[in-house]
Image (cartoon, rainbow, N blue to C red):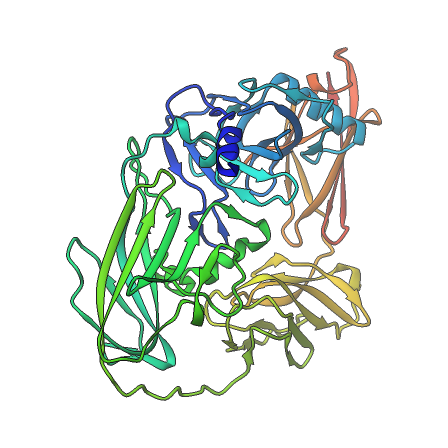
Length: 536
């Protein structure tokens, strides 16, 4: 009965576009540092397609330039869900007016406005926006997300609008990866991982002994689309017993960076191909990965044939099975050679120090034991040397901390931590400046910024455009007034410009001279004030 109720409940939603849907991306696809949290609906390669609310509710939030979404509208529905429409070119006039009211009430140009249920209600099928290409979008499309309003878990939009999608094509296996566990297993007599290209034929019989994990490269496909997609459901069976399963229907946002653990991230760095592990690293807490004993790692401890079967399904239930045989053949397993150095353990808080530098990686930020390989570069005359703790990208689950001692007599309010040259925080306490660490493979150093941002006029007509840049710590905020009255300047997408449409401000057109005052502040509180007269 519960399943029937949910089916009826979800069937009340309608698609956000008025034409046949073709997808460019589906829910849960692995990406660097995050899962694809929604579906990408094609807009025929153009901008300006009408976007409609998928159900009754109210506009609870509107954002501009946040999280890579570009322009986005959030609609909260009474059933407990919130739909999010991203990369928009423009908002509907009613929603844009609500955004402007919020900005002027709060005197902020930041594009992040929240609304109550009574301020901007919408009905199913009501126009809310026009599609676009704003934010981290490589081409015009609509990115649609649906969240559990209470937990903010990402949900598969397919569950809500599946009646409007056509799919009869099953997933396809592209490749396998056998991953002998170091010092505990071998495949074909070797302890290195083995990649097997998959065709319609079964691979030649593998031989294994000891503990081995497997990983899968697979794609799903749909009619009317040349794109490939992620897999909704994956099962790995050994002799008819399920040892691993993954169901991509709900993903907590806080788990996004665990995609790097589920996938073979180091292999992706070299090839841009995601092999997803059919076993779980000890510190990986993704709730939808289910295993039996040994975290999905298979122990080949009998001299016999083991039959392994992958079962792949999409939302509709289109299914692909792929079976192969692994012969258990007793083989000497090379002993694990322990490398010298500092290991960061996945199940504890870790720290590492060098003169004037201290790194802390708390418990929960690593999913497996990691051998640090720190290197440093001397920076004569600078506030600190540069440090890197791993030779390639090695992302953490959330942010760790790095602190530098400030040994020079400088204004500490202008000192910050740079990660690959980008501002990564700069909290000062008792002689130390602390910043964020997201990737052990980045370069970290102290930097100094006592230079104000640059504000350059580009156009001073009815649409005022200013170029806003900062070469060091980066822009933190800005504020503008005309004749002392606050006015909104919007960030221009994908450009270092901000723009004010004077027709949307409280300033009335009188063809007289007005004083524009624009103040920009960077992340070290350096301030630039730009003033000029305009005629409007």
